[in-house]
Length: 567
Image (tube, rainbow, N blue to C red; front, side, top):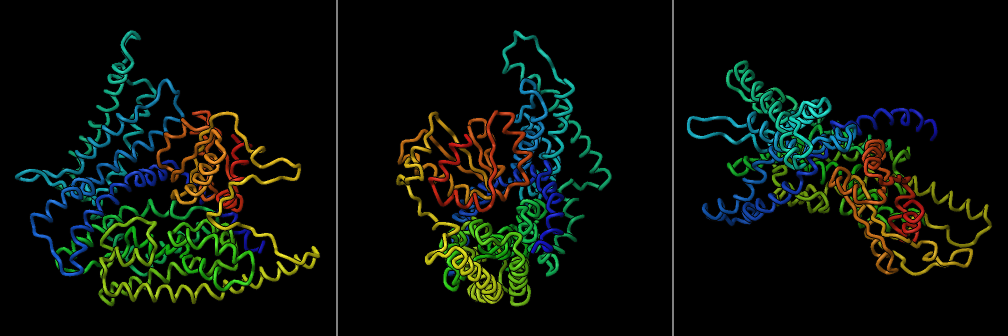
């Protein structure tokens, strides 16, 4: 096992640097910030078009009215992502500037959106074409959102601003301070747009980007391209780096644009043929979480003879059903476990290849809606394809194939764990249960537990000051479990503790109001970037190991003690 781990561990630092790159992080976090827009607008799509699956069609005036909310939210997605991307990069740039001379993020957002509007809006003989303010303009949005903060950074760092006497109120002084950076940003991109259209004979930047990258769109929808994407996410996770944090920024623009294109194809009476979509990643490649671990939790629960693996099955089958699979990734563990390397990497590839076969060969519709990633995968596939009849058969085949792939590896590991447990019983001379590695999910014990010195865990877990805790993980799943456990026991014991959870990159401004930030192990690659933010606000940051983090989500007493020791 050590021979297997060493070459993989040598790769990990390089991939962690990629995952923590501030520009890649700004793209990822900017897109995450816009996810509520995608999910909200999808509700109106479902109301408008999902009844079509049963032969019901709204009248044109009603359908147009229902689509207003979609058109003015999803239809302007790239415009909003320009601002959120710029905001996230601005926050990073401000870490290297004095607090008294920081970049104004509001001004950067305004400047970025004005600039993107100049690049993306295409004039027509009558009116303007707003097509590229939506999903087709996402790549251009990233381009603008990453450059404008750098223009501001150069101006602010070198004091290229309008300075007013100190007697002028601060809010008015800040307004004049922002004039030059905003003016430089808009003028630079205005000039770029004029020259670019002369060179390309009238094409705007988003149109040109799509034409240049169209081969990549096609390649990403091929069997090979889809397998590379699915396998890469699983491989990075296997070596301990949160896979989607590296892969998703590269494919998100394609995935969102493909879903919109699929919807238009169906509305025009055709077939949704684009394979790569956000929900393809969520429900097919990562069925039950990265590595397609949906069936594995149930296999542990039903077929494992090892006490530890059965306990892990009990602890993980509910969260894995809703695509939160850290309990099984760290509990089994799967990460860096050579027994699970093959199924963890190849099951997502098999799933997405089968999905493509159903779409490209059998004529099933691909994903036409963007649904929340926490919907159980089998249900999500059916919903996102608009209740395509073949999707029911696809779900059954995927589940059967996943069981066939995972089962022999699960049994091999179960035999290994059972042998280790038996050996432990023999060596310890104990005739009884092997201590469980993880307690049952959600079974939070809020009663006082007597410790070895006769005191209670409550007495050892008291807080003498108001303590605010922020828990950060990749998607807000396991961090929510830990935050809820902390809040539950704090309420029961009337402790001055308040905890909240976020996905990394979401609402990072909260850190300034926190006493303690707990970083989940899957986001270890972001530790250095997060430490800079915490240092800026004098907030303490603590990290956890995989097994320790899962134990904290299961045992509230341990979680309270952990906070008390580190706050």
